[in-house]
Image (cartoon, rainbow, N blue to C red; front, side, top):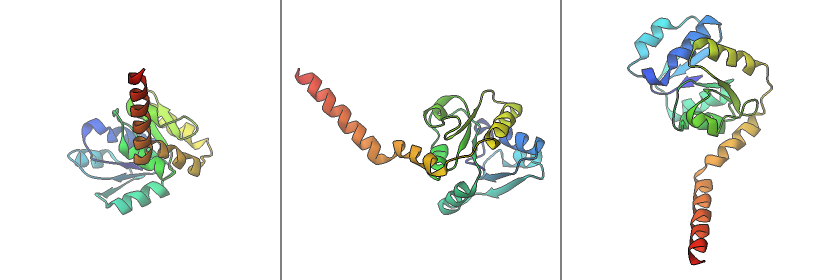
Amino acid sequence: VISGRQTPYKRFDLAIQACTRFKFPLTVVGDGPDNLRLRKMAGKTVTFVGNASDEVIEEEFANAEALIFPNLDDFGITAVEAIASGTPVIAYGKGGALDYVVPGKTGEFFDEPTAVSLADALHRFKMHHWNHSGIATKALLFAPEMFDQQMQDFLKKTLRERKK
């Protein structure tokens, strides 16, 4: 599955090209200004769902083999949401994905922003057995409660150091 606003910088085209060329199934969730161009390049293994409710997106993530996250993003909440569902992420190996994708554990990386590099990662992905509950545990690092606790710990430490 791939999900989000379909704009050129999100690189949906890479996922569609790779899945079309190598006949991998792909569900495309979302819409956007790039939708028509993406539909034209899609082969028979690619299905477009369009915009979906949060519940449908959660269901798509929970039932997907993986989320493809092909763009360079500073964080990428969509990928973390997929991980929270226990779904591994196949991501471009730059930016925020480096914080939550652990090769062989929570997903795979591809090194170049090309359909061939992504297809190589898809093939590697298929060779692993994925621990879905272990993947979901990784998302807890990004939970609001974890952020609150880390912030409180940081402030306490900073105040202690100022008193010295």
